[in-house]
Image 1 (cartoon, rainbow, N blue to C red):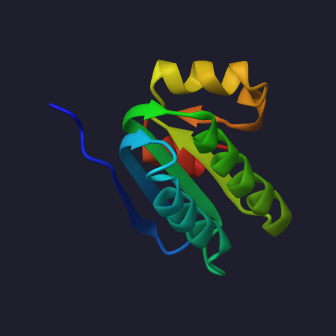
Image 2 (image 1 turned 180 degrees about the vertical axis):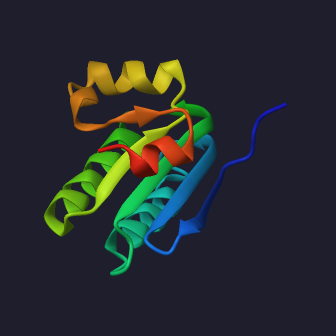
Length: 116
């Protein structure tokens, strides 16, 4: 059974949120992920955005591009963007694209939020 695509945002503190993505991240779904991620990073009160990819079943290069756009915006705003529960295939894709070093990865939201 395929995991349906879904993207959600949940506040975990007044200044931090989790954007959780499930299913395939491809041309058909990228707009929803990109819109949610950019909105979270761009929100004035948010200082930490945790991108939870645990339920991602496929990610194409378009997903990496979206993540890099969000990372670039986060860098300009002074917001921290971190990855949580990234599948091995996603981490491998980031490495193949030469951008793995741009993202810190964690296994839980508390560590992702509080780590320096």
